[in-house]
Length: 82
Ligand SMILES: [Zn+2]
Image (cartoon, rainbow, N blue to C red):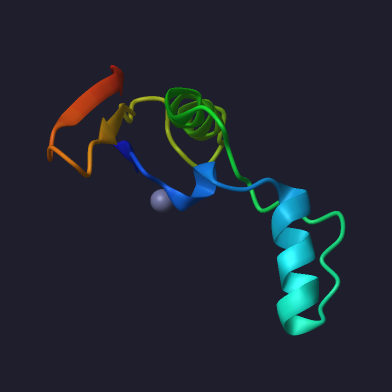
């Protein structure tokens, strides 16, 4: 089961933002690195599941499902059914 959560920090930046902050704070150049931020929480769950389903490391008989955990309410909402 893939579980992402609301209020995730990964929703709050883009690669360019983090690249600039790391350069500023640490003096390290991470230009071109993908920190895998996302702007759509549900889509991020679907994308991760797609990656897992396409992986040769996971047998086809393994079921994979996805959900979003709401950090405010504690609710777990299903996004992708296996
Ligand atoms: Zn997070």
